[in-house]
Length: 252
Image: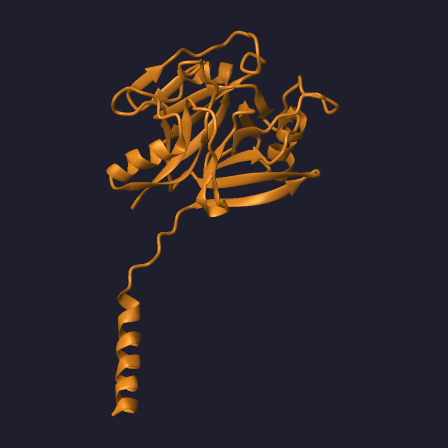
């Protein structure tokens, strides 16, 4: 009888397996890479499939500031945060320095003139998310084309412009920081977010996007405060409160 029971149990287990729910398959691939002597954490997102969003203020009008606050807000809506990263420079009150678009809400204005700091190191650019695609667009081109972005964050400087490094980058620069940014493919299907694992120069970071990731356009988000939320890599960075945040949301 015990032998028969084991056989029946095995048959029942086999019969149940096909109806178990499949694990979610997100089109987000996070990995650690080495390039020119430095390590980087990279998350590649299929912009044709994933829900790429920008986050700034919660429902009370206060800045989220941290990744867990974004994750909790999504959880309350039956969703999860798959990946996130700080997504542009901000003032002391966490408001964006340049143009910021989140659905029907627009904050700030498109900054087209040179100014102080990295943001004003022209050319700068805009990360623009539309239905089925995401693009890094140089600011003056963005102004001329006026794309209809459902999410957009202006930052700077551009790291790569049509396959060329920013003209002001110096290979022998002594300015090194933990840096993060985003690059996009020419057809807008690939959005690749990267953060350095140790301080690097602008030149080094730009070459990562151009040479290692083969992306024609890339934009610098920030340095020193740079952080990433990538559970796939065991990273849920904490630190200074952030302004704009980019993330991928998915149904629970």
